Image 1 (cartoon, rainbow, N blue to C red):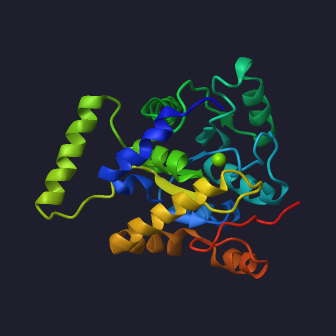
Image 2 (tube, rainbow, N blue to C red; image 1 turned 45 degrees about the vertical axis):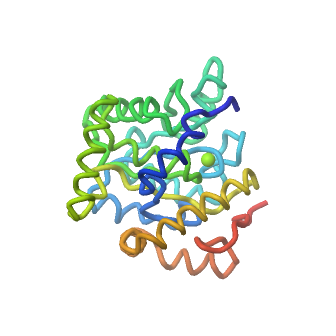
Length: 264
Ligand SMILES: [Mg+2]
């Protein structure tokens, strides 16, 4: 994959806005998500990462273990309200969009065609434009964004709530700085629900994943309210029975070392 400048700059931005890296929910994989509960709570659509979230890296087909959960997701939100935003399929490394076509066919959902890599603002704009163009348009706050990487997927989720233009983003930043300095409670924003999947189907970038996990834990250490917020969301939208069943087969849980989710 070509050099991802927006992703590389994220740690710098995060120094000033660590919440950028914070997921609302962590699950081992999408089987733990309660899509019906999310729909009841007003979430009407979803953005999914592809590699190591729905498919093995560089593969176009769904991980077989996720078939039921994925069908449940497509049925709950409707196929046109589910968008795959990948940094491989549908980007400039996919000339002719052959992979995007294949992934779209196998996953039964649209793949966003975009030129900027996640988590660039341009990628967020392209995703937002897709949902705005639907016959029944969706706003970012009605979306769930699911992915396995903090520096790309979670940051993308957070950025979907940000305005398109640089001056408007600066104005938002100043407003939240004012809130911070005046001791007013910082708003979590009107953005999507950011979901981090922590299990990996094929080991890849494990050192970076450990570093990302440590950053999230460090942020929660200094911001107990952010941790409480995550636990509150998990209480509402995570299927405890699935978590417990998966823990029995030693699947990965947030806070412990990364490990293979356990297939193949
Ligand atoms: Mg991924």
